[in-house]
Length: 495
Image 1 (cartoon, helix red, strand yellow):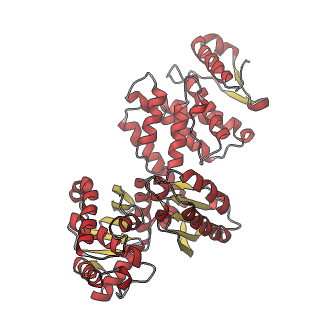
Image 2 (tube, rainbow, N blue to C red; image 1 turned 45 degrees about the vertical axis):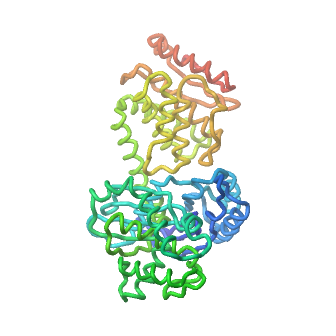
Image 3 (cartoon, rainbow, N blue to C red; image 1 turned 90 degrees about the vertical axis):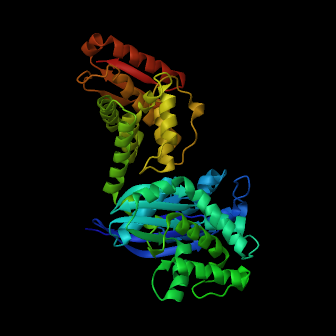
């Protein structure tokens, strides 16, 4: 079996990380790592706008990463943006430029999806036993996850990180008891809404990951001579920093110059977590988001299973008519297969179309009137494990336009797929929904869908079937009129 090289990039709030792995069969072995401190979150102002300087630092890093990835195909690379790109009002502009210099698409993941990916990174790189609590303190957010084996049980992403806490509580570099106490209490405040669930579920083992926690491990180990972070060690480090008085004067074994500016904030957040969860010690894992991306994305069966499980869970939660949803899915995929090559539709879009078909009626939970808008709202705002933010937006857009008038101006631009491709998928979904209006099995004939000039479609229908199915024919003619209003030609041919 030929080896394949794959890569993942984590666009963090403080640093950008890239890992490259050799993919052989079902095994992944990391062969290279690159890391650049870009301090992206430092460039986020009070209006949530990224400064040009911060964007330039990020772009310069991605030029280097892009050079290393020359010769890689888009299917071999996965790039994930995290907290700062979730928060930045001008993130789209940065992503547009970043994709140009890097040469690969960039996905911005939700906080909960980031947490799940972090857990996968730990679970696949550590020998864990029983229920595991994983803590990741990043530049802009902190993720807490409880899982067992490779399954997440509970995830949360809190808006507190080393960069944001440094700016708020340690901006002048002064290290005093009151600064630490304010920061620790702020961390406890952020954690309070979710602590009950974590304490109720419980854990057998605690693992930390991220650069800040690794530095604190090295500092604690210098004190205890043990490869573990414990509460007495953390409190001793806090006393050492307060005694130094200013971060520039801190001279502590294990604390490198590059980590100095952020260590007080990282320590405060971790102490807040220790207090809130009554922790006394924790281990460390080198695995984190970028390793999680490797296993979630390139372990394709697992990634696909996560999306399937998400769709099934939503179907149960919102009591979707699964037989009707499956009818629409089968019809949509049948139509997709017939025009895939001519429309140059990526095979991965079949999963997106199928998912939209299975979930297009999720809005019935609210009301039939405006179901397409209700469905889109639910899918835009639900927690969808296994889906990136762009995939979630694309799924929402498909169900938004699955019926009624086509108001094309209401589509928000997507990085995930070109607008023309999205509208092609919309047209297939609309046809599948219209054809299954009777909500019964065995109604449809063998469908023949062909391509005409200027992106036109022609649907061939047996004449005797048309004579027996006036309701469906009328529905298709109404759909024909809807598409004609926006310049799309749909021809119905009685064969």
